[in-house]
Image (cartoon, rainbow, N blue to C red; front, side):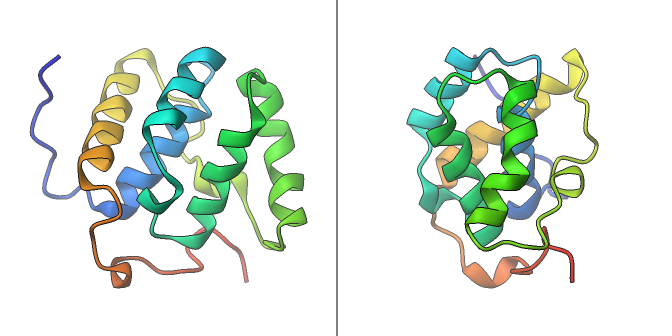
Amino acid sequence: MKTKPIPKTLNREQMERNTLRLLCSVLVKPGTRLEICRLLHAGDFLDPVRRAVFEEVQTAGVLSSKQLRASLPARMINRGFLGFNLEKLLAPKLASEAEIEQLFESTLHLLKLGGSEEPNLFAPAADAED
């Protein structure tokens, strides 16, 4: 599958968020989620909150997306992210079938980048409320 060039307006933060949206989407089967998680590494997520969310998604196993999304807030609170807001992180919450392709492409670009970008490209508390 040939990917389209990533829009210049799509930055590292958006790629990380899109990847998490893909992994939590009801349109992605648990087995597919596990395969994507095997390709990614926690270090691919520069933001500490998004990295922790990825680690929780990765360790969740074959939960349905509904179960996964229901369990993530408690998992993140247990890790010390008291202001974690899943709705804010996954906004817009529902991805259409057409948008899933864009989320996959964003994930592919994140895979290519790996953990290679400077950490100052994100706001560390972007996904936590004050």
